[in-house]
Amino acid sequence: MIKLAAYICTGLIMTCAFAQSDSLNNHKVLFDNESKIISWITPQQNAYSEFLHQRWNYIKTSVPNSPGPEPQSSYPQYYFYCAYIIKDGKLLPDTWMNDIGERIPNWFESARLYYAYTGDTVPMMIVKKLVDYSIDHGTSPSTFAWPGFPYTTSNAGDTLFRGFTSAGRFVLHEIQVDHAGDMGLTYYRLYQFTGDEKYKTAAVNVANTLAVKARTGTATHSVWPYRVVMNTGEVKAEYGANWMGCYALLDNLVKANIGITNAYKSAMVKVKNFILEFPMKTGFWTDGHTDTDIDSHTYKSNMSASNAKLYMLDHPEFDTAWKTDLPKLIEWTETNFITRCVAGEPASQWGANIAGEQDSFLYKMDYQTARYAAECARWYAVSGDETYKEKAYRSLNWVTYCNDANGLAVESPVSKGINSWWSDCYGEGPRMFYPALAAVPEWAPKHENHILYSEGILKNVWYSTNKIQYYATSINGTEYIKLAFKPTKITLNGLAISLCSDSNHEGYILKDLGDGDYALTIKRLKAGDIIITAVD
View 1 (cartoon, helix red, strand yellow):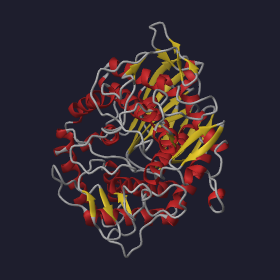
View 2: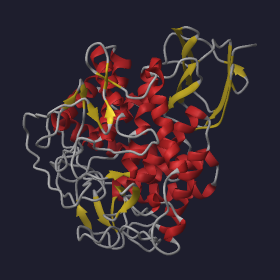
View 3: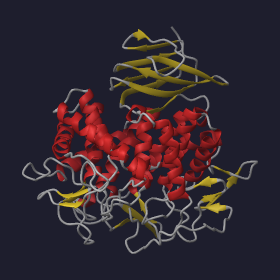
View 4: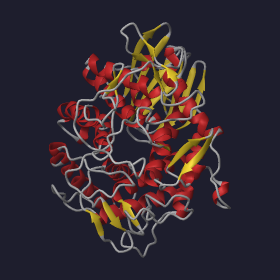
């Protein structure tokens, strides 16, 4: 996304030079004995966990309401504005636009992972209200060419979402199809968490429209158009590559036998064929985010490629060549969005690679750096290659410097004039820490119990000293857990599950981390109640 409308990126490939100092975002940079960056948050063992707490604590306690009369003034700023400006010690809204289609899916993921990690339900309630507002105030009518579909953008301050028209880049009712699909997936996942049928209905409406509109993709026309005008059906951009959310929505509904599953299966085949035949081979992972009017089949966005990488790490069956394709995609990010820089910005700082966003916006961002770190950490867990663990560790450490002790984030501390976006700072960035912790559970706090990561939705999470309990909603899933006790019994729906040697079979893997801590991986082939205890 373009964080400042008047800011123009050169997009040049260059050798990046940057005058390093020993401070970043008003923090003194701390180093290890290799003179490489470690987190400013101490003790180091708790740094990532504390970072996650800081970010959510700020959202829970410190965000001012929107300016203006009712109803704006009854809602926090993140309802109607994409970003914020810090001026004279006050948080003011950036009046550029409202990026609904990015914020809601990323905040939901951040909230549900934090809930699983802590048992704290407040973030889920915050996000549920955001989703409710969006469904009620930002869904296309049944008479439109794209019916029952979410609006992905709005003008800043608008309480009725009808698109981002104020800058002249888009027309009324214009949306990004990929982000609308991401919202549909969020609706379904919120249905799994709450059981509320309205979310299932909203998800099915999105899926039905996607199924009807799916087409065979080519090098210039993707399986769905990237941008459309919902009331008329006019296509504004034919090519995009950010389709993993759409695919996941359809896949979830098929597995649950909900909706027109045969049509969903047909669309899924088209998505998979397109992804593997075109962007996977060409490197044109096009998406311009919600505020850029990109119309190109050769444009590159780190987010689109990152979403594909993260999906395949959870679902390797998507790509039979995933063990070859994933390291190539990580290298693609390093070539296009780490080595390539805006003049005066670094490719790395103190051993940490830092990542840019898209071809027309190469500024180094906290959330893109967190994405890169999560991918490297999880590839390390697969490959055992320590260089990826090192890359992940340094980049995550760098990201922790992007907020103060209260959790107020600055997402681009090496850039000038770049505002901080709610979707990036409080959704897309923090959510990447959980898969990284799953890959390297030693990075989670000692002597604490935490569900580090799961791809599926968990609810009824409950923690005590020697017991963890939760309900897994998916029929097939994996949970990564760190324990401060050695489990003596693990049950699924009251039946004991067994220790196993790998994650290809139902059961659990237990790794002794030393000093009384354990890493537990549970592989399930059915939904239900999981209970982990230290006593019989």
